[in-house]
Each structure stands twice: as C-alpha cells, then as structure tokens.
Length: 344
Ligand SMILES: *Cc1c(COP(=O)(O)O)cnc(C)c1O
Figure 1 (cartoon, rainbow, N blue to C red):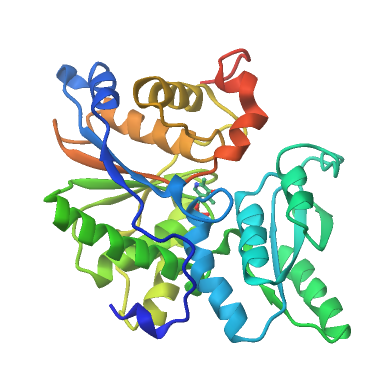
Figure 2 (cartoon, rainbow, N blue to C red):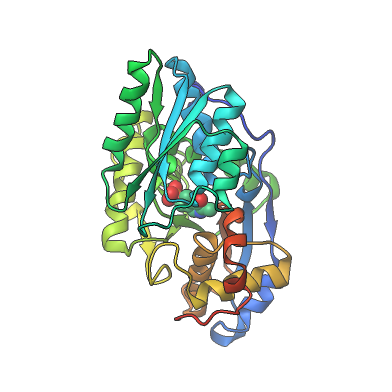
C-alpha cells in the first residue's frame, strides 16, 4: 500500500522492537488447560517517540503532518484529565512549533484540579496554551469547534483532532505499523497465529484491520475492549476501519474482520479491577515490563483470560501490542501494588 501519498512526520526513528516473553509465557501456561498455553510475543509501542510514546504517537505522525499541510498554527483536541492522547498531542505540537489547546471532559464533577500531578503537571510544563473543562457527556466535537472559532476570530487557524486521534487520517498510523511489523515478522521468520490489541476510541484496532486487509494478512486480530463490550465496540471499529480503507481505496471491509472481546474493562472505563492488577503484576514480575492500569493492564488481562479459557491452540504464537500509557501507572500506585480491595 502506498502510504507515501499522505503527508507524514516521523517521531520514531526505527521500528519498535518485537520480543518473545519466555518467563511470562511459562507463568501463563500454569493456568492454561493441560498446563500448556500460547507463546507470547510483544510489540513495544510503549517505546515510540514523543513524551512518553504510545499508540497516539503513530496517529499524530499523520495528523500533525496534515495540520501543517493545511497551514494550522494550533492543535485542538480533547480527552479525560489523564488522557495519554492529550499529553502526546501537546508533545507533538511543541515539537512542530505549534500551539495546543484542550477540551477536558470532567467525568466526575469537581475532579479536575489544575494544580494536580500527573498530566496537569506535564500539560503546564510543556506549555499548553488553554484548557477548557466541560462536564461529562458534553458534545466534545462542538466544544472543540468553539475553540477553533475563537482562534479564527483572532486571525489564527486551529486544527481539530478528535478524541484519541481516531479518524481516517489518524488510523493511517496503524496501517503504517502493520507494514512495519510485516517486515519484522518476515526478517525474524516469525509466523504468528494471532495479534491482540486494545480497542478504545478505535483508531488503533480499526487502522490495523485496514492494514491487515490491505496487506493480505490473514491471522486473527483480536481486540480487547477498554470501555465497551463487542455489541457496541465492533460497529465503531468497523466504521473506523472502513474510513481508513476508503482513504486507501481498499474497498469494503468485511464485518467479520472486526472481532473484539468485552468483560475485562468493567466496572467502568479507567476504573481498576482485580484482573488488571494481576496482569500488571505478572508482566512486571516475569519480564520487567510495565503496563498501565487504564488500557494495557486490562488488555493483557484479556489475553490472559482468553489463554486460560483455551482460546489459543497450545504453543500458538500470540503477539501482544503494548500501546503505552505508562504515566498513569503512578496515579494508581496503591492499586497496582494490591493495597486496595477490588472487584474481579
Ligand atoms: C488510547 C490508548 C489505547 C486505545 O487505542 P484507541 O486507538 O483509542 O482504540 C490503548 N492503549 C493506550 C495506552 C492508549 O493510550
């Protein structure tokens, strides 16, 4: 597929590593049917560029390039107070000499504190220009358009990036990732049986569905919902995959190409559960690799759960996409160390 037709900036200067996880594989096998589980591999997209890298970095390579091509001077985006997407968008803006404004959705009234640590500290340190806080359930698109209009009235030009950077252009980042991985698998002689990826605002999962289709990759791509069960999540991902496929001229995306599992994100998006804590501890203590509590901890809990149910053939090679998110780990230190009682 010819991605060179689309403007792109480069924020990471080598493919992110693909590694086998021998100790994690062994620990996982103990709980699998017959004591034999899948062999787990990892794609280290937690090591992407910008601060600190994660899956949003790949989407922003195409989104920031498009903003520059359109002559924008400001990136406008939205998210929750600890949004990885907002933080990485700000980092991209700084790198490109652009200004950056956020609309933050305060899901719990009164919870947004400007002087709080975590993201707010980093927002201020990297010099966000303005933050608009709106109540949970607000129309984020309308709130961002309003910010763009304010800028226009000042003779400036804003570029609106939807939540999570998940639109057709952002999804190209994960088409590029699929192409990068396909070359790595070939160079390593690695014949995988399945890939497991997180499924949230859908740009990552949807972009990969389009990338698998365009590159004729036939192995299952398994999404783990971080905020929705399959009945709600799969149509969203299918829509995103189709939008990316349309941009690339790939034709129809079969509905069956989109597969996801729920049951690991409850009780709510970003609220911890016991399976997440087990997954974070298991990878940290077998391989020294950290996961985050909001996304990758729950996504890995999904992989562990499927393996224990016998979803993968014994010794099947399964690749876990580590999409990043580490800064929020520090917001949940007591939880991931098991000092807080949680539901399963
Ligand atoms: C945003 C995010 C995801 C989910 O990706 P989407 O493209 O929004 O579906 C997964 N992991 C991390 C760490 C994220 O920040």
